[in-house]
Length: 490
Image (cartoon, rainbow, N blue to C red; front, side, top):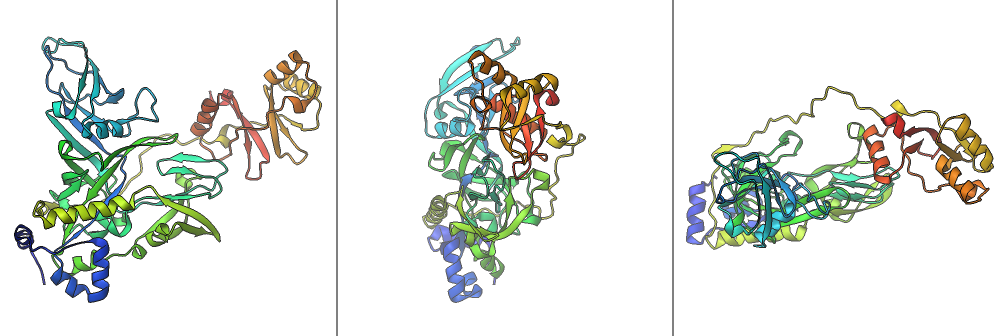
């Protein structure tokens, strides 16, 4: 038994189409079977709402008088890409503002535009004969724009990994704040409501498919960047008219110590053209499997700790080596349901017709890593022998080692070489100036450290962030293995 798009659209126009969301389809197939579902159900609606970092918008401001050809421009202090025509720009949701960068970015600008808030536009130009204006500073709203096109190169991942952190430090990532020693777990995606999980072979989702996007109507332009369907990491390239969207479904986001992004609402109708699609749209959370990845280890060495279903993820905890770890989603289940049900309502009211894809999406793309000519360097490649004093040494011995070893940093350990603290030449100088005579009076107990397998770039960032010039190198038991200083990094 098969149906056609024309037949289903005719039923939509007549108000006779039978539409259910993906969760309801599971119950129908369980109760009545695939054959019944294929005959009775015309459309299954899906939805997802989560951070989609590869999102942005093309904007056209119209010409000023006299005209300007932007060389640099900012929207609410967020730099926008100017390398288009004279008064076109692209603003990406992860571009951060020059002022308070981790609090406001391109995603917030897009949300504010859709909310019809005024946006400050600043720009400058190198000037030409036909574009003589050098600078502009004005205010715009979305109604002032000729075009405002949401254009998202990579959205609606088929699934996401689950991120954990086995290291001793808190990590701030695009998967949120990951606590040390497997303190929490984060995942994203809508599971059984996810659009691409319901049409994994792209029978109905392709170039030209009409979708719910950001509260308005959008379209699939093609496969998204990093599209990797063979490993069930398919993605979509989406576009839509920003003027028809809602700030409820486009939300600027700030990730602590990582950067900005934007939550995007995507919903896709799956026409039930045959029994195969009826079976696929009945996929359960138990059937959607993903990997638990340890972000506490450098990327190319990052292990898969185990595989887990979305059913277990949604339960609120997962188990790794008998340890129960609290688990939470970066995506909103509430909004995923709301999107699927809103799309259902649009179809039932005859406001939304289905578009057959002009071309199917590829199923055989291969995801390749970046080609690199230079090798990564790690701390172990540049560390040097640490100059050590025991925690029961007197201050004079520390001062003598600074002089004789020509070293500004003395690592303080116990007799088993377990890190206890650090003392610098400045600490000793200050101790003399303040008439302090005991090592315990000047030792810094809270020490920022590194490990052999940490990338040099990360070690350098630690020094810069904490305004320090050396890091003790320790193992998992806090035993001192050496030291790396700003001098080695230079």
